[in-house]
Amino acid sequence: MKVLLINPPWPGKGYGTRSQNRIIKHRADKFLQYPLFLSYAASNLRSNDHEVYWIDSVIQEIDLNETLEKIEKINPEVMLLETTTPSILADFEFMKRVKEILPDLFLIAAGQHVSALPVQSLQECEAIDVVVKGEFDPWIPEILENKDDLSNVLGIAYRSKGEVFDNGQGRWEKDLDRLPFPARDIIPIKDYGEAWYNVRPFTTIQTTRGCPQACTFCISNNVMEGKVWRMRSIPN
Image 1 (tube, rainbow, N blue to C red):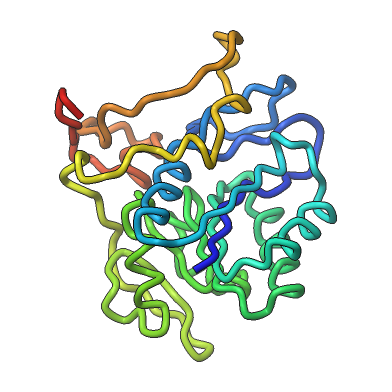
Image 2: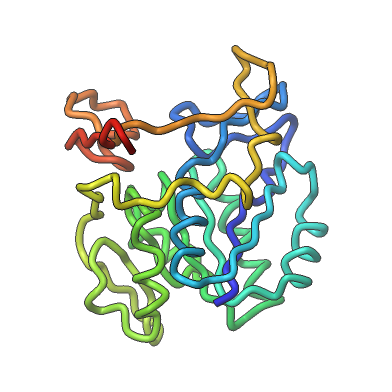
């Protein structure tokens, strides 16, 4: 399938941060962290023989109309995006606009907001077909393989024949060595950095996932990566 991964535009002054950030806001400077989970999703999709495309409207500084033109030109069968609570109204509006031009598009929403409120998100935004809860990158190929009948796919909420269904809590990959390395050719590192180290090229490597601590305020352990600490092996 032709799959588009996208960081959609976020209206407002500055550069809105979504992916890989615990503090979501508009930055004044143009230093967005590399979107590791989306890059892992890209490599996982490609290893399962899907054709993968990438648009980052924030880093490329393209507005909603230009973004929609690019999407229409690609004409994907599937689109995946991450969401956050501060950007969710813009995210919902964006997904609605995409479905107006591509009504048959299979639209997958992931990320912090929809993971915390999966059923509510599906009810509030009819453009969404599937919400993947928490750590989404290992499970996208399985969802696409079963997209005509998602009743047995765990860790998602989805829409079918006008009804919303919830298949239980999110899943976490226990063996991180099974994951393909991020597709840094599809999502190039040259576009991303860190505000505290503005020398490029710059990228991020993820050695572990999850956190066993009980910080109630943290998105990472409570919503996205879970409380089980998992390591990649040293050779990996």
